[in-house]
Length: 311
Image (cartoon, rainbow, N blue to C red; front, side, top):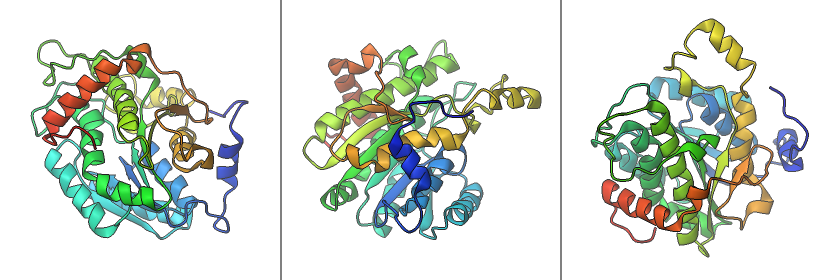
């Protein structure tokens, strides 16, 4: 699907960037869920801009192959991997230690990883899987990486970017039912997690105000990724072909996160949501509920065991 009019001039400039003028040289960028789809496309684009890219995913074999492809396609050898299952708090903490060991400063953290299962299941920590991976893992990983993000902030600024979705508008908080006991509907579980992404972003932005670390979220649009691979409307080959003509390619969707990660105009912009054209997105009314986002923050801190008031 081609981009229409209104595409930002900065996104066009990103596509023209060459190794001669890499705007992200010397910047360390971490992308979660980077072994395929939107995450891999984001990692490739950031590598093309000269960044040192760390790719995180749970499948070691697929991740290693993706790393090699990103390095080859971008012409940038500074691409590494961290294997972690974001459905495990222990894995999230171990990943943060591994990243901090190899990279004293982190300049960009892109929370891209997500799941959309068709059946209710729990994470290894006993929490409904969609909420655990899509919201609690970014919350915990951000907390664990705060020391290196602060060093990144001292070295020209740091950015935390969380990939949300237009479907956050349909989300309902349901903060008290983290095990999703009772009736469970896949779509509602997913929309709840996407609403949580926006609430987390806005609260993080407020808590980090003045630190040199910004927090924004992005809506990549409706992208053809493997997130839907378990769903009946995506499994048949003929339906996949139909969807591919309607949905955006991962490379197009990735422009939203790449813009938020690299645009000079956003160096001091925080607490916003952007689309792939670099335009600000008006998120749902409930995403601006200050009391709700603070309750979510407190619950997330309790569930992940970080026990923090501020990052």
